[in-house]
Image (cartoon, rainbow, N blue to C red):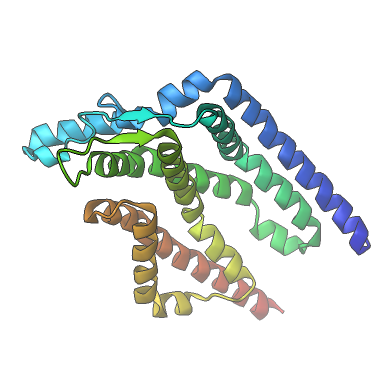
Length: 264
């Protein structure tokens, strides 16, 4: 197959991925009331699941500081086309998140013919695991990081004379960035898997630079969370666990590779 033929195949994979995003985006655009009232704006309300769970823990432990988002702030729009533009952008983001498994499937179909039989065998289930980790990261960001971020940033005040009235665009961008960043970061074991397969990463390398990885994880946590220690620790813990899982995956790949060399 020539280079131009590869480009033609890639073009069709990209077109099908874009169509999938648009289909889910149109669905999100139509059901905007559910998307906004029950998903996007929900974390700032006291009856949101995470807020209720923190309130129960606060009552059990007597730590009132654990009660978050007890007084929801007002979200306002100050641009003429602000709500319509937000409606479109949120629909596109929802389309990307919902169609992520299919997008990865199209990507896998494109690179699959270039793999050897044993590589295809080892990569079996990659679509499921990649989609699962992405969904897990999105849920983690939405149900844990988002409420904490909304509480910290929405209730932060430099003076009693300044009232928080959060701009709709600012609120939406904060939530979408947190959710998408969490989904991408949770792909760490998949990244380690592919880097190990091509020989760029070994379990010895990952163990040697474990302390350096902790620093990078802390930096990533600081980027996607509000500047409070509690939120950063909550993000660091699963990322460190995923890093350790990545070491196990790399070690397993190295053992299989060594076994294949011994058979040869």
